[in-house]
Image (tube, rainbow, N blue to C red):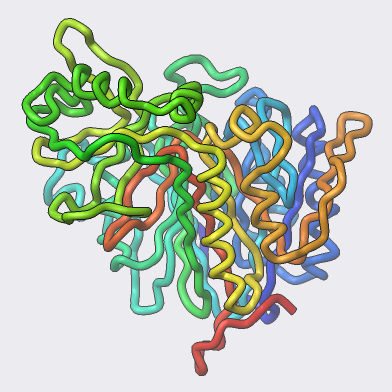
Length: 435
């Protein structure tokens, strides 16, 4: 879908508005983008909306695309949006991140749920190749998917392979949103149109470099265990014992501090490489325990798991979440500043976890700017972003994060997946900061 776009000026811009009317919000966002773009046609735009009725958003991507002069747009509706240092949850709002890079070709992609192969095999491989359509200059794929209409856990590794194992980042639409009925597909922005459910995204090729950060906010507790019996997303036995009994045994060993973290729920970390002797940060894919069946002793997680996988119980830890992201951002300070950032935070990493003391958005802004942000201004239905720092940043909250881990790409939970965009001198191969 769409065509390639090239530009002569590197950089990014962001817009954010919390007007109760999506049309007014779109106008407000375009007013913010205009000075930064200075009349240049951008390469791509990432669009996020929250708190509006789905029908009210049908024309949003078209209105934005017509004003910007592009159809390389991707995004989705969400429970909350991020813009600069500001986050809005369960309230109306629109957030947009626009990229303008010389020598970069962007292409919008879209796959309705009915067009995705149901079974694995040659059909799925061919479908992934036809969707990504990579070539020698392919650099990255950004994806947004609806988990209520797709079996996304089996699609992501196939799409990653189709993309020649290059950078892939994205998010899953939240399964519960304001004005969204249970089980109803999320609204996905694809080009200048919308679709209910399925998968949308962008491919980027040419002179661009995207560094991905995956901040995992969970603390491992108890011993590692081997899944000895499972069925799809049900873990029936761990180490030959019923899964519920094994998890309960771990829970009984919690310290007082660990018991305080139980309010955030229990998680299962699935080892990326089950043959490792020791496990540390980044060695687990975090998935939430979503239920249990007392009669059978099984527990359910939000991803299929096969027998033989090594797992460990995890707890959501706000302090660890802050420190983990801080360390990753500190490492990025050794490089030239990025042109902008896409922030895709788990819905659990909002005010329910950090209250008003901290957010992933604030951490990104502070990493590249020592200026402290003021209080967000709200007047007449408009929510104006506070200080955004030296780099444009936008994104949304999600029910799962698509990000690289090890030598593959998987869906994660309770994490923050961040893309830092940098322009590249195609001849010298050197990153260039925003001008």
